Every structure is written in structure tokens, then in C-alpha cells.
Image (cartoon, rainbow, N blue to C red; front, top):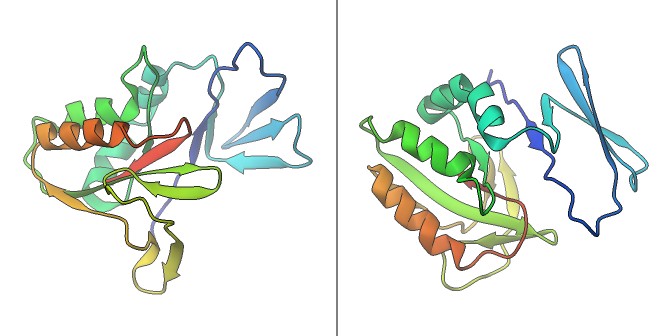
Length: 169
């Protein structure tokens, strides 16, 4: 049975944001509560706005190494001043031989955008008993070196809205 670990990083608040976020680490689970939400949410790991991307990246380094071998991995991007976990992960695998499929998407205003496709269509999430959870019609590129991944990330940047996004490797 696969073990899926879900980690959330709360971005630093903007100066005009009134939303308060509370993170609590309790034993093996972390809890996230938003001031506007009625409910609290439970995750395997929650990084508050004080935790830098580098620290959260280092904490999950061994998970990602396994992830590149066996699992579909979701990673989040950084900011203008930090390269983010996606680009750090690409640097980490640059000394290894690999062949992977890369898709690059964002979820913005509850819509899924394919950042590698020129034509942006409304994509849907599906679940299949054999394939698992997947996004239908999401463009995949087969790559075998870190430079190819960097080029895909760079080309996808132009299609991004300002939202939370992740890459499936």
C-alpha cells in the first residue's frame, strides 16, 4: 500500500491581508486553522510562514528521493527571492540518470490550468481504479536531464496566474 504524505506551507501574509492562520504540531500530525474557516484541517506536516523553503525542502529530502523512484510527487514553487522546492529538487537529481514524465499545472480559482499547453482548456480531475487520481488531458513531456526540466519550468512560468501551483514528476 502506498504511503502518501501531505505537507502544506503557509505563505507569508501580504501587508494588506487580515487572514490569520494558526498552525499546531501535535505528535505525528499537524493542524491548520484559518480565521475565516469554520473547520480545521489535518496534514502530515504544516510549515508556517516563518519556515523558509530551504528548511522545509531539507526536512523532506529523503521522501523526495523515494518519490522520484516510485511515486507521483507534488512540489511547490518558491518566491522571487527563493528558487523554490521544484528547482531545488531538479538540481538534486541532475547528477543521476533518469527518464521521467513532467506535467506542470496550477490550480487557480478552483480551475486547473495546464502550464505546458498553449491552448488552455478546463481540465478535470478523475479517479480510476487502476490508474488512481489523474488530471485528464494534462500534457506530459518525457525528459532525461535537468536542463530539459528547467526549460519546461521556464516556459510554463509565462502561463501562470498568481496562485499556488505544483508539478507532477
